[in-house]
Image (cartoon, rainbow, N blue to C red; front, side):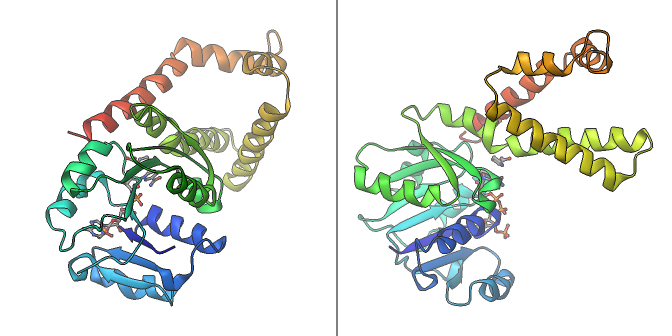
Length: 267
Ligand SMILES: NC(=O)C1=CN([C@@H]2O[C@H](COP(=O)(O)OP(=O)(O)OC[C@H]3O[C@@H](n4cnc5c(N)ncnc54)[C@H](OP(=O)(O)O)[C@@H]3O)[C@@H](O)[C@H]2O)C=CC1
Ligand SMILES: O=C(O)[C@@H]1CCC=N1
């Protein structure tokens, strides 16, 4: 299989690394397309046998699969300035937030589109990707896509494309929410006089342990919380402050704002 990545940024590179790591593709069969010519030598150093091209130098794409990994805001420019046509047998895989299959089909004049929403832990093979496809994509093509996505972590096929904006808000953006909460906890630690590196250790090991308890316990989240929160104790004091300040609602509102933004990106 030959793959071209249009938009060799963080996610495009991260996907490429996963495909190469699991031998799903050879460097010789990968094309990385970037906007800025100054990036070419750095990318070529990392991938010595990959063909690295600038967008305005591309005259044809020799690939079975083209991954579109530019920012949604750059997509209209890409579509208007393509100097080549997609071949009928080429499959497009978009990982752009918000942009619908219909819009991709219309702007690129190409029907065979799969739309996916991965997340940044894909860099470690620990991501999760929701994906869906245009009508007419064969089962064999979907299996090929799923094999590639699974090299970046887990993947879930969704019948309903509309759910992908929710997936974007939940797992696409999710790692940033987690870092945000971890950062707030570490800062609280330093404010209480714990050295920053120690605070980081206490918080990250707590998150890791708690994550494994979620996955290895028969108890639901409410019960796990109750196990920690002794009557009249410290946890209860923290949880009361969170509830008094509507922290859960605020987090939910933030996630819904991310979904709304994904929908706006398609306008
Ligand atoms: N970051 C994340 O965690 C996730 C991102 N996504 C989606 O993945 C996509 C990429 O995001 P991310 O990797 O973070 O962003 P990056 O900015 O790191 O990557 C986008 C890349 O596209 C390049 N680019 C822009 N225009 C063109 C063009 N005309 N031709 C070729 N390359 C071009 C940019 O070049 P330049 O360096 O010049 O800007 C940049 O390298 C987005 O659509 C985003 O919605 C999805 C899930 C998670
Ligand atoms: O913030 C964004 O728009 C992209 C999509 C999901 C994660 N990053």
